[in-house]
Length: 227
Length: 227
DNA sequence: CGCTGGTAAGTAAATACTTACTTATAAGTG
DNA sequence: CACTTATAAGTAAGTATTTACTTACCAGCG
Image (cartoon, rainbow over all chains, first blue to last red; front, side, top):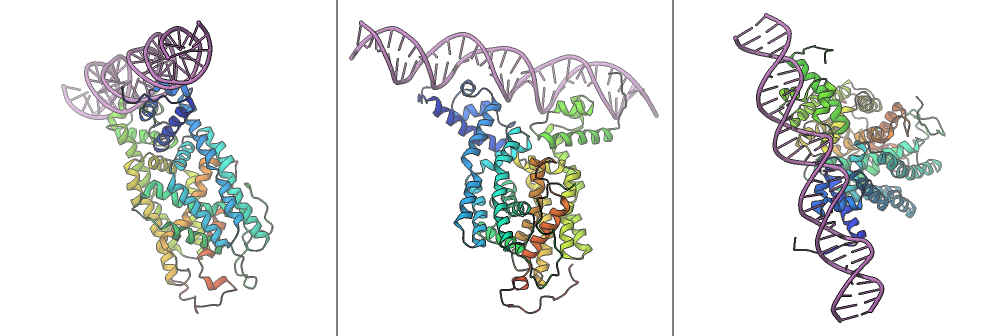
């Protein structure tokens, strides 16, 4: 009441509300978060929130878009891939980047999981602009590896997804169920292990010992649903 | 009003309500599902629901427990592991089982994701009784493989998680973002690919790398003692 | 009758959103 | 400099609807 009379500028207040809302939506989802709670946590009245955003839905979108735009995930992976070096090193660093990001900021993954589950249309758009790109960057790396004979010939997109699956699934399990005390692993060990399994798994077979049947015909074309 | 007067027995009505609630909770989560909607879909009044369950929370628990108990996931994997056979075949079948189950019934995974995100305490219990067990069964397989020299020496639990991560992450992506038209893969190809990457990745180093000198003799210790 | 399956009609609290009203502040103007 | 003034930041006190849950009552049947 008589405590703080700091009047924010419109832009600053908007940012502050977005920040508060981000945390709450990430923790409890869209439906589980009330405008009242957001207002209280931001130290303002609900009315002010509706002055900045036409409705709760729009606030939610703004939160997600802000998070996404500042994330730029494929970009960081591209950097890692471009610095070059040992394959094992490269993949470990990609894995490590995933785990680190989550450790630093859990809000993004929770936000996106919630929105995907609650089927907000934005999540579809998000996938196409963000996740699909992420996969594609790594797939390109795989494709190049196959071309140079470093990797065997499997669907690059599938191989990329598999690698990221190992890492991301791991971090989800940790985030959703693990806390810090249960089935926790040293991140470095996780990254190394996962990278080495995948890498060795992708190495071409020995040309002499052709014991194993080929998985896919040579120069496999992208397999989008064979039905 | 005057249409159907079928009076169910208490047990039958309970089951029916549970069935309806299961679908709704899976689609929209706990908070997104109203008791009114459940009642409407079940063709009864809310009052009847509260006659069968003391509250919404208890109904939710009943839904989850029912789903879990009839799922018995580790059991099916144990069976597959016990039938023995080729490692590649075995792992493909495990993967395939995961994908099939999800294709047949999406409710379980969605239910569990929601409950984990919404931090219902049950989800912790669920993880320990169900997911952890699932990991452990496969980890045992890995451990045995390491002992017999078929696999290299990595943390068995981590290796198990990694394999399941490849498969489960894939199915989540499909479920959450994919629909049926986007980045869809032939399940059989997925299973084979993923299994073969992981398997080859787990083989002891000297076995398939032509460059490295063999350090260990004999790797065919016991061929048919998989279990 | 009495017991079981079922309902109509509530209630109190919460929720998203509004309306009408205050105040702080920066920019003129004399 | 004081002094108005326009305006943007902010609020108190709603409202209509929804939500989980209750109470009191009904109907068929052995």
